[in-house]
Length: 90
Image 1 (cartoon, rainbow, N blue to C red):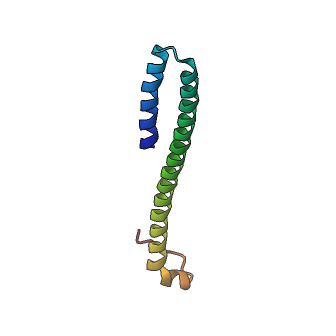
Image 2: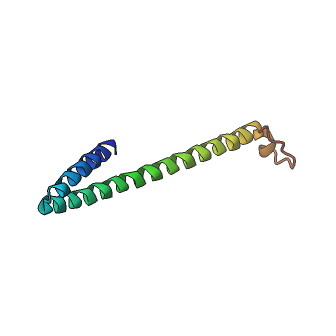
């Protein structure tokens, strides 16, 4: 993403230069390249957002599982004997 951002900034400078020189063919190429780079950047950014969301959910579920396992392990005897009152350690 950093590489794409740098390429976009370089391209913006080139676009500015070509517009000042009235070079329409290069300007059209620059615009097409800019659109391509922005689409690529946005695609990667969406993937990063999804990965970060996945990691947050994974952490949450992992912590929840630890609490559940702690409760089950500490109350194994009560669960095996089918006692009605189970006071979880957590």
